[in-house]
Image 1: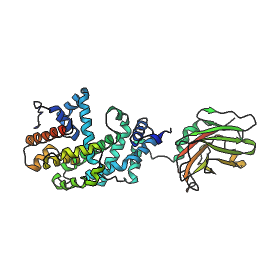
Image 2 (image 1 turned 135 degrees about the vertical axis):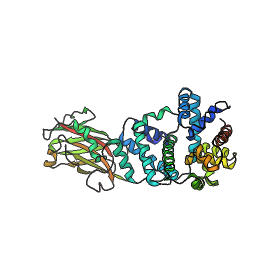
Image 3 (image 1 turned 60 degrees about the vertical axis):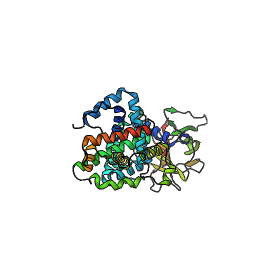
Image 4 (image 1 turned 90 degrees about the horizontal axis):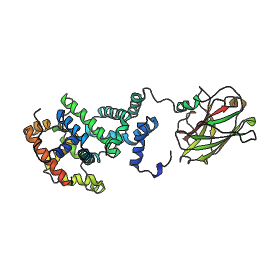
Length: 189
Length: 229
């Protein structure tokens, strides 16, 4: 116990995850209270459906309880890990809903992308990874930059991009991969 | 699969790392990539780096507090039953309790029985439970007095410390509030003193003025089980 005053928020969340890995229920509840609003916010924004986002949140935290011990085995920061799990679970739901025809086609939701685009004031406060990604995305042709972002935020598949644009699947893939290579070079990879 | 692997192109595997992080690989391609990633530390680091970049696309998404029912459902799913009343988490302490005797008792905490100082009084420590406070307890059996002094930790700001006696199998009984600096003293009635053996002493932090419900509502800061000698 103790020592929490000198820990960074990131270290505190890591410590909570470590305790959750040991089935510490109180730590689990603390972790939930520290992180659930961000994760719910992300899921609601991706799914545009609060009931589905609640299901995703439940899925994410149940997974977390079962697999908190796996956290150390990757190189992410803890919030990246948690948000990535949440993003992936949300995208799975979104893709499933689209297949079943119960979610809007991706073309109808293109406008959503711009809700979260950072304005000048926000850009000044962005962390370095965010600044670098935005700068490198802006070097891509606009339609490709947008496509990369929609793949991440809306879970677009190559198939869906091909259907939406009327471009052949393999061409779409070649096209997006070139953009990813360009991004990689720009990001210094 | 129409999208067969394009293994000839330069930068192929590096690009796959980005595709993997975006969730664009599926089926066999995904499995093949994961198998390779498990062997290739650089590739795994590539995926980590892409993940760290792409996750920044969520930075601007506003937080939103989920409804309370979500936590209830999650706890039901992972713990199998609704979270029990807070004081029930003291049950493990109660397991060590022994019933029987009357007023002569010591306080047993964390497996350490602390001896009486020799003048008939009993001294013991209440160790941190969920919280981070510790108390020294002084008990004078003939007069039924119990006093606590804060020995470690700081009283949470804007909270009152409430002292509880929890007889085995019964609901917690408030003994009263500690002062702002964490000291507490009370003289128990004969009836109350008779319930002490086998009971748990606990300190919770509560809203200023004490628990609004008459039962503990805050964090269990410290606890211990008195054991009859």
